[in-house]
Image 1 (cartoon, rainbow, N blue to C red):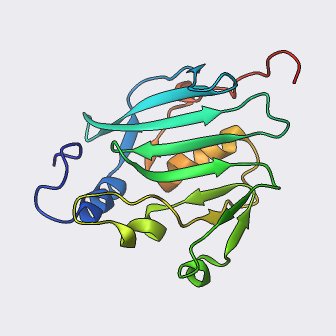
Image 2: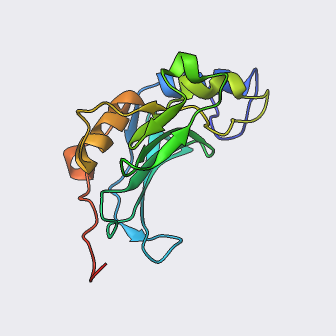
Length: 174
């Protein structure tokens, strides 16, 4: 199945569902690189499905000099279909009013995730939706490594120990 060329036989949501259901693995080790902003670092892991590169990737963005750990992990095909936002406890994410009852709350404080299952109903025939709906990250996920492992487990991505990277070190004074 061609994951990168858009829908061939049905709804984009069906293709994303099939992609997420398939076992995946990281194709190579990643390293932190300078991000789009001066305080930002990015890492990119190509994703294999059935031993083939399909244009999918897992990307992490970190802000190591933030007073509290702050990072995002995304799964992209090439549009983002799953996202984890590890944000300070004072940051808020507002869910759409219509979705709040199913998600547990209108506002999520701090670390949260945007699962495809909570957002797929907004997909059009040919486009992945913006991931508006989020849930609180489990309280047991407190560190970069725990978050990366949890994300990979939730999205069925095999990440070898050698492919796990350390959170980027703080630089200079804040």
